[in-house]
Length: 71
Image (cartoon, rainbow, N blue to C red):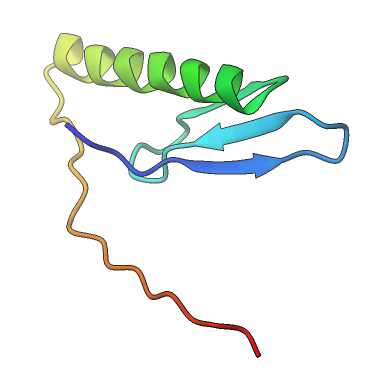
């Protein structure tokens, strides 16, 4: 499974990562790499909890991205 992760740099230098398709699935880290490792673990636990509870696992509908050049 693939999930989009949003990574935001905090003013204090750390990072917050979230998986928008999985409500409440958020993690953080002091470095980009740590935040990405932590959100990967959070996503895995989120899905495990869904399966254990018998709930459907959210899937991500196709996402499209637009890239523009700022003048």
